[in-house]
Every structure is written in structure tokens, then in C-alpha cells.
Image (cartoon, rainbow, N blue to C red; front, side, top):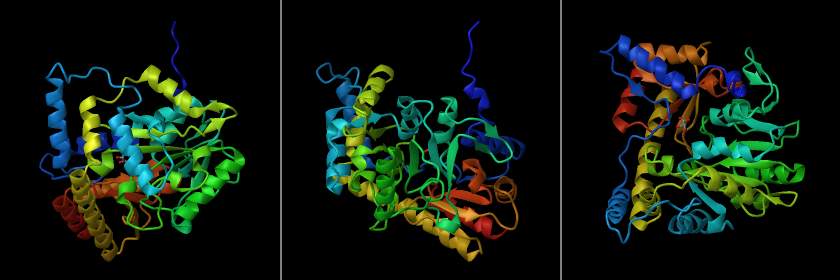
Amino acid sequence: MFKINENYLKLPGSYLFSRIAGKVNAFQKENPEKSIIRLGIGDVTQPLAPAIISSLHAAVDEMADAKTFRGYAPDLGYEFLRNAIAKNDYAGRGCEIAADEIFVSDGAKCDSGNIQEIFSTDNKIAVCDPVYPVYVDTNVMAGRTGTYDPSAETWSDVIYMPCTDANDFAPELPGETPDIIYLCFPNNPTGSAITKAQLQEWVDYANKVGAVIIYDAAYEAYISEADVPHSIYECAGARTCAIELRSFSKNAGFTGVRLGFTVVPKDLKCGDISLHALWARRHGTKYNGAPYMIQRAGEAVYSPEGKEQLKKQVAYYMNNANVIYEGLKSAGYSVSGGVNAPYIWLKTPGSMTSWEFFDFLLERAGVVGTPGSGFGPSGEGYFRLTAFGSYENTVAAIKRIKTL
Ligand code: MLT
């Protein structure tokens, strides 16, 4: 008789955003007349920029002609896209990253979940708390997290690095030494950012203790402050300790289009084993490349028109962030984030738990957000709103919240 991977049975409940969708759908079914504004999952709402649409059309036309038709994409990504990424995201920021250190994929969520496969299951992970749930859940599936304590909502073998208003939502170096450190800045869910000097401390620490940093920079396009780094490779020494995850979902609206990439520098080694070679092997075996049309769309993100149009799109969402931030602040809420990231993190009013506030907001205002405790124990008593809605819905949601 076959056996299942029992680690899956250890996962408590359903994935955070599936649970929220289930609750909202059930509520809508019971209250069909109620208008619901969704500021929960960080999903974009603005149409794809015209430069991206033209490039998609052109690429589709190429597929209709035998001379330009393409079959399987190279599994590490087309050179035209890897070159554009290396030039714009790295050389343009003074980072030494070569095109062949960039692995194109169908998104950062998959890569952030899959990257742990190249590490031993007895490695110890450290995560910020609160944290994007994919990092922890995928390590649970791999059997790396020990036992679950349902009352504390923590795993015995995970090092949690609390991020609360006491430390300005920036993790401190852990007391216990981890092997793998997950960092996401600008941060999901708190919307906080760290300076280049703060990130340099992490890079120095990782190199000193022999840890690897998995750095999720999916929200870098939303950075507005000059001393906040866009890439971990802006820090000296990052090539020997860091893997970087990037996404086209938030900077270019590709949540439904799907495109991302992971950088594994050739200098990142465990003894004399190159992690670059391991990830290339994994990619080659398990992945057949992002579609040609989508990679051409990704290339358009770096064209002069694409850059201009996307700058406006990012500004549109950041204006929403400001509407939420200022609106809630004037209503007496304690708020943070929203300056270098499209997420606003607020304290739940009174002594409401995160989930109580979720229900309260849904039932009383028809507004969906994300309960902070869904991201980890230090998220209890907090709540996340996303700036990715339409301007009209964002304004309406804040108006509704203010009348509560
Ligand atoms: C979120 O809402 O946290 C993100 O949209 C999730 C994701 O990017 O997968």
C-alpha cells in the first residue's frame, strides 16, 4: 500500500488566503445584496500596461508563423529576458549579477516554496514573525519544522524573529544560529522596509555563521526612500550568502500572467558544491520554462515605454496606500507601512483579535482584509489592508471603516 508524505498532515487548517476566500464567499452567498470590497489578498486590479499588451500581441503573432514559432522555452529563461533583467535590475543598481545567474520562472511564490528543496531537511530555518505563510508551510511539507504547538501557533524547530512596533517591524539577529534565513523587504505583510546598512548587517551575519539568506524582493518597485535597498546584492558580500526572489506580479501586474525569477550567484557554495548548479539541475528536471509570449511581455517591462507606464501604475497603488494610511490614522487607528510597500498594517481596535476584526469588518462594512495572526503569532492584534484595489474602492472602503 502506498504511503503519503505525512508532513502534509501536520499543516494546520487551510492556506491563509484560501481560508479567507472561503469565508468571504460563504458570507456573500448568505448576503447576496451586500457589496464587498476586497482589500485582502495582494492581487492587482489595474489592466496590463499598453507596452506589455503590444508585446504580448506581437509574440502571439510570431507563434502563428512557422519561421518564428517557438516550442519549449530554454528551462532557465530566454537570453533576451535574462539580459534585460541583469542590465536593469542589477547592473543599473551597481550589483554584480550575470545573466546566467538569473533563473526565469512562472513566479516568486513557486520559487519561494521550491527553493528549500536544495537544502538538507535538518537545516534550521529562521523567519520573521509575521511572515508570508509560504516560507513556513513549504518547510513543514519538507519535514524541517518539528512539532506544532497549536496554542502558541509555532513550530518547535523554527526560529521566529518577532517584528512588532517595538522594533519598528525590523527583525533582530537571532540568538540561536539558523542555517537558512528568510527575509522579505519591503515586507509582506507589515509593509515595513529596512535600510541598506541594516541589510548589510544580515549579510555580514550570514557570511559569519555560514547561513544562506533567501531574500524576497517582490515589492522592490514600491520603494520610495533613498536608503532602502532594491536588491540584497547592493550589499557587499551578498554573492556568497544570498539567493534573491523577484516577481513581475506586483511591479507589472502579472499576478494572472505569471512570471518571476530567482538569482543564485555562482559564488554561493556549500563547501565546494555550487548552489547555482543544484538549482539549475532542479529547474532542468522539474520545469519546462515560462512561455515565450510571457517572457516577451516581461522584456517589455524594461522598455522605455514600459518603464514609464509602470511607474504610473506603481504611483496609482501608492496613492491608494496613502488614502488608507491617512484615512485610518485620522480615524484614530495605529497604522504603519504604506511608504515603501503597498501594504498597510494596523492595530486592531480595542482588544479585538485579528480574526474578530476580520469578521467585524466584513459583516459591518463589507470590507475584506487579512488578519495579522494568519501570518504568525506576532501578527495577532494586527490587520493588513492592501493598496492594490481600485482607487474608487479604496476610498469607499476607508469611508465605510470610518463610519464604524
Ligand atoms: C499576499 O497577499 O500576501 C500576496 O498577494 C500573496 C502572493 O503574492 O502570493
